[in-house]
Amino acid sequence: MKTKRPLTICVFGSYDEKVLSTALLLSGLSLYDQGHKIVYVHEKLPSGAVYDASHLALLHIYQRTINRLKSLVKLTLRIPDILQCDVLVILPFGLFDLVLAAPYKYLLRKKVIYIPQNSLYHLLVYAYKNHLNRQRKIFIHLIYLIERFLFHIPNLVVFNTKAEVKYYTKLFNLPNLHTAVVPLGADDSIFIPSARKITNETFEILFYGEYNLTHGVDIIVGTAILLRKHKNIHFTFIGEGRTKQKIVSMVRRRKLKNISFIGWLKPQELVKHIHKADVVLGMFNNDEALNRLIPNKVYQGLACAKCVITGSSAAVKEVLRHKKDIYLVKPSSPKSLAQGILNLKRNKHLRDKLKQNGYKTYVKNFSRKPTVEKLLSEIERLFTK
Image (spheres, helix red, strand yellow):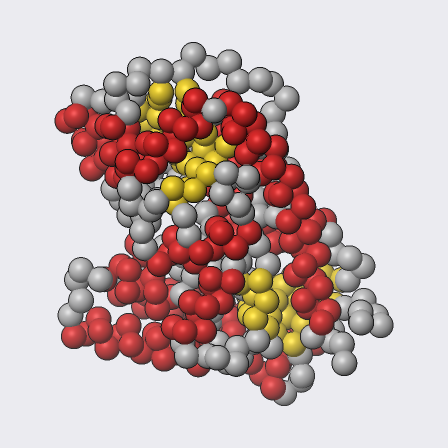
């Protein structure tokens, strides 16, 4: 049963519009509001949001805490805008915006929806896992308790995968957490199929993203080493990150001629390289992040009607089928990835099937229209009896 009237939905907090997941949600709501009124109550943090482990040095955290308090004061002055709203939507990395949203829920009966992108506690554990001392352990445990408490505030928490729901409810011991699953998708105003046919002299394999352990760039290099005798297979790496210099040094030391490096590109330039690729790579390191998340590049590759290979995980297998929509390989295995690349290179029929089925699945389930409609449907459900 749908709500009897259009809702006024407040996109609330100190979110960063440059964060991909936030940008997708903002643009999607503006395009497909389903007759609801969207209001934006926003104060951006001067130092940016916390969405990467490198942002978690203790001094930086203290500085951001002061900036967060200033932002909360400014948001408090927007009370008239908030009062007209039925529901407050807290976007990714807005964990502490829940503090200000709480009075509106408990005193004014406003509904609150939270869309987390990552756990601050998890980011801290990842950042300091090899450098833990007593002070940091106490601080991380305090963050855990705060984050667990704040997760009690929303009427609804929206995750990207069922595996994420399982992870968060177990991590914070919240068996009664009210959740919904809405896939992230891609910006399909940029990531679209190309009408041009591929005319590469070599079989082009594309990796793009941040150089870190989760993406498994070292595993991809290991694959390139195994395939170095296949002169017609070439890898292109696009991006930057903490481990890039280490990766470049490894490639030079091994004298690999089948890998090229390019720095960060704007999405409009990046998509040109995706169009030229025969295969787009996802994530390959065997850790819990891979198991609960679907990488942005997987959605983007599917949106461009490309053959996508990624490490097998619970999250991916929820919504995509091996050798039907996507090609899955054993995580942390250069040999498995190398075999997958060779199988696709030798089997044009399989490549064409993956491109066609993957794109159809993307349009049906992960493009902005169905994902935003799913989110709004979950919001409407909060107002039905």
